[in-house]
Image (cartoon, rainbow, N blue to C red):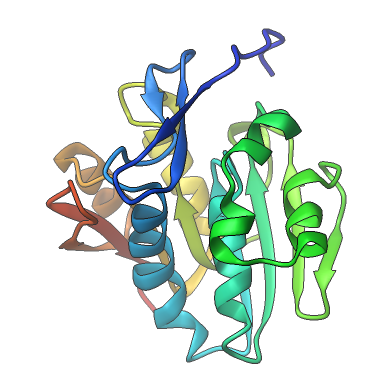
Length: 228
């Protein structure tokens, strides 16, 4: 793991009224400038969680790039609409400081109880956390490239790393093969990225590729399914 500490990101107001952060280290924002909340909801909830949550009572989710915690908060909120049990694992080598996470105001915007939001955003890393009766969370402060993942385990992968230009190592055939092996048959990977090279790599690994309409400001996004 790189021992260098990341620089403190800048807070940015996006076009849907929600906040995101600009990473000086990677030169990109954590979410779309056209709407942080809109993008996460469109890509990870509507195209990822909702097609699965109606079919399975127990769902395992892998997130690559925990970042601001927005995807976890949205997943918890949507879980309330169904009687599901969710096991959620996220990987991030550079967790953001609590005071920076708090400035994004996601808890207030999503109307999530303080105790739940605090558990999700401010709990210790690398522990198995019971957020509530039906939602288990492990935030791994580890490099997913170096970690072993259970085979045929995850139903959904939220692939939310920084762009391929900023983090090319996280868009390689190596990581996608690792994820393919970890996804259960019929499981899906969703990402905001629709670059041809990324889709070709996913297809070569064995995923079935769909190009779906993207969130505001983006023409397309990608959903990849592991064949049954």
